Length: 297
Image 1 (cartoon, rainbow, N blue to C red):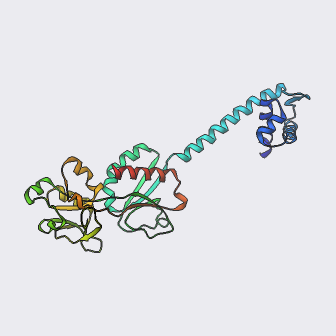
Image 2 (tube, helix red, strand yellow):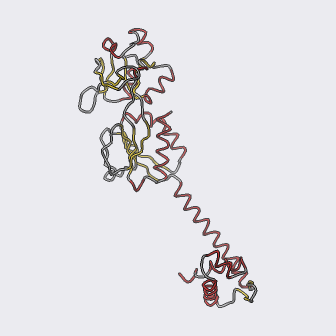
Image 3 (tube, rainbow, N blue to C red):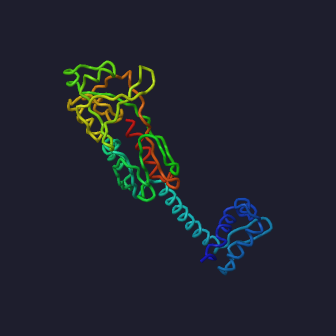
């Protein structure tokens, strides 16, 4: 099978250039090597493919017919190569993503757009607040909020969210609008309860333009899922503090109003973690672009 293709490329280059030397220059070998390769091909076929003179090389009748077939075959090979290369660049197959609940609602709402963009992809989305073991659980991408500790993975920062404090217009009409974080002592606050069972303090700047600091606020309602906190605030249950991307749709619709803007502090970064061997996979790159777009919109 190896002999079937041996000498064909030197022959085609020689026939096109009508010169062993020109073919050798194109292939990066010596003219003698090209000439010997073509002679071996002619010996296997049992017919002369080229007429040789001291000045030029021309095709025999058999050589002309053989060249046409070779060029057709080479065109098919190039098309196959291009098809395989395109497949390597096209996101396809199964994509397993692990992410925390706080990121889930925004991504799930935007996911149909991602699936429509890449019809050859199938997504397995796993919502969890524990850190997934990417290798053991066959996870392609893990999205994590907060500081990182796993140094064996490739981390890419996707987003630097901002804490935003919000309330429904009807709640603010009843209870008034806080003008400083200390005013929250007189308000109904909707707090996030951590997996450890304790309410998470809110974060504000110690003064406008100052440094972030934690503040314990009184709670009238504690919940353990971020999207439910947004829903409770939209329903008028009180004041809530969430990441800006969680509240953006409701703020855009006028169903929530930001308060204490001048005291707003940066939140923890959102990172994507991938195994080093998978970071260049088209499906991973496509998903990371989508996440940045979805959470930033």
